[in-house]
Figure 1 (cartoon, each protein chain N blue to C red):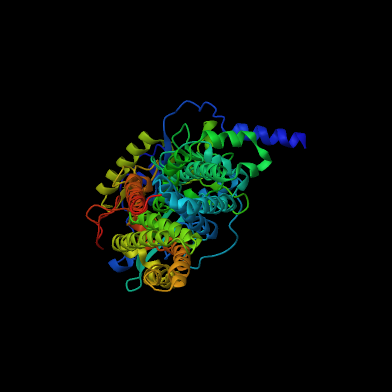
Figure 2: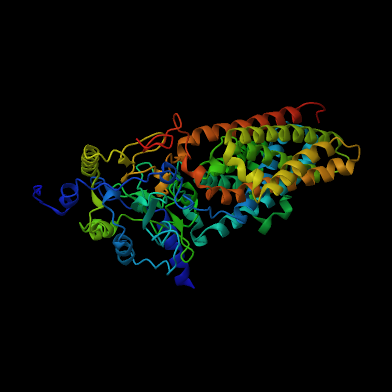
Length: 352
Length: 279
């Protein structure tokens, strides 16, 4: 009879009394190595839905038009005065739609100001909250600067004083960093997650940034009057270039995200993405911008660009839902070295 | 009316008040040895009881004895049941694992939390400050393990607290306390790691060479986990990611690409707008 070792604590029961404990491994390596756990998703579905998708659209138009207006203003070209004025209204009122959408998305809307409790280096949402605050202030300042002094609300002497003290161009330039952050951070916000579709490529940020700027240009084109021939022309040229950048970013995104981009091309959002965002939002407007008809060129094309931008941001936000439940991608979510997992047995079906 | 205003003003002021944090203690965590788990779910029940979490309802998955399916805002311990049987030989094995928040040393949820609600407490555990969380759900998409979730009823993010309240009083977390086989071990991280390594050596010496530690050490872009596991099959078999993503590891690069694009296009617009006729 084998001698039974002395047991000092409960843990020893398992370390000392079970030397022959050997559950037979399944004879079929295929069965042992069936991937996943009953096909259940590893990740949680994002809670970000239509509020966030719409926010991305509005803040893109708002910040995009702000940047272009500020650049036009800083170019010291007086022919832009009218469009800059109109652009300031556009930026302000589209910006005004953003906070309600963001607050509505929160689980505790009453605590929206907690975003501004701290400054956090690693949190794009925190950066975005500060950027939106700063951007909002500058949008309002710009409006105060161009608003006729006699029609300032409450006849505010303080505002009037402010308007006189602040040179317009200085305000324009000072607001630019905030507007540029508003353009650049939404893609990064999505990239800084564990969601495969959003995070597997570095080109979602550039895609969103280029889309926001082309949407800003499109919205400004709609505000131009028929006589602004040269301005129309310049905005169209800019839209061409930003759409080309958007297409390049999209191409690089598809190349680098590979399998992770699947929900955009084969999922529920694929129609909206391929037909809406790429076809009607990028290709058709690019053709229409070359049309001889001023209506097609200056009205239909920018409207399609705006709709396409909305389709792009909407489909990418919603495709994240499908991507989250893809266990295969969530499993190898980070760039691995030599395809090996971080912890555990290596690649292949045979356990060590 | 006046009182309500005062209350709002006080709450507003308190948002920015930062009390002195308690002095740091030695880091604690869990070591979950899945070779000892018998799938009794005492940990799930003890966790629910102590933390006063609602039940998940009497539903069955139909695929195993697992009826809570996943970790969630109201399920902070989840026992996974893996049945690996070969129909031809009718032999096989059971793998059971009590899953829990990994309490990562560089936790993505903490890194992305914009309010500072998610913190490392004095025991080095990842903790949601419920009075701060505003339910932005960024942590939900940040967690590569799918642990944290937002509650529908109260709108805030919830997950394992590593029984912060019990630790404060010098007690063992409810799940570890209730575990009849000590599959869940609670203790100081340094001691747990040492214990786990010995256990691995022991298992290997006895021929159980497929046993390995999941998360005891940093690997790839990911930090070590303060709640780590001893597993006997690939991590994905237990629904754990084999290569979890640490989103903030890519943050600088992401921002670089994004800002480069917006700045380049802004420069293009400057060239376009400055050329030609001048007023």
